[in-house]
Length: 247
Ligand code: HEC
Image 1 (cartoon, rainbow, N blue to C red):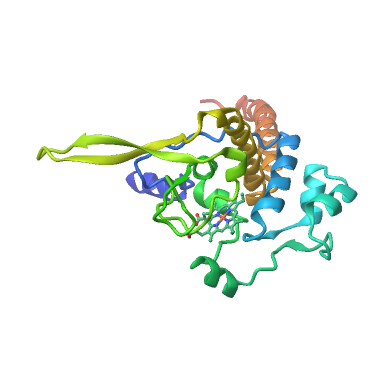
Image 2 (cartoon, helix red, strand yellow):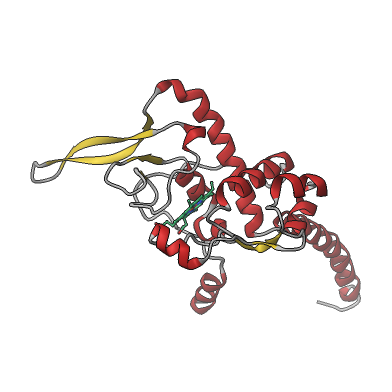
């Protein structure tokens, strides 16, 4: 029995605990079935992220087909001039340049949603804050000393860090980073729209991480339904077989 439990524990899909810090994650609440959201996310991704990040495992054509984007719109709004629809979402920046410009190579984002989880991504993209000690002038609650600039700052408005004073067991007090707040309260409306933009973007990144996820889920329900119906017949058959056997 114990061995069986151990085997089950091993087989069980690993639940990712990507958040190693103590700061809580904000739920992304994205919806993979919301096509308009996925399309908006694709647009943001191509226009704001693909300057540095690729999605090498995705092809433009597949994305357009899955998300219902017409070919003219795909060519006009989502693709760089010269790319062909059947190509993967690769970028022009070489790894060497990435290393030279940013000190780290901006990673391919094809499976980032699976590595980090959507809530982490959502929280990451909404928690850049001003930090003049950093090369890009920003830091991030989820990714200390991040090498990425806050590329969407114009859509969100700047945020500042919020510290809290805590006193340790020895009576020393420290400032601890607790969260972020808008520098200018007038940006509140903009920041709310930005959260929706990020929700769409994270939705798209989740789709890219597993394009057939909704198909898989739908199939799962069909399989369960089939098994339920099959069970009725199998049970009836079993009763029939055993009917004449004394027991
Ligand atoms: C100007 C270049 C640049 C742009 C544009 C950019 N990034 Fe980045 N990004 C980076 C770099 C560099 C890193 C690596 C940071 C590090 O390791 O310190 C990074 C890291 C990340 C990470 C963390 C990856 C990890 O290791 O977990 C995510 C997620 C991410 N970027 C998402 C995005 C998204 C989404 C966009 C579009 C809104 C975007 N980036 C736009 C340069 C960029």
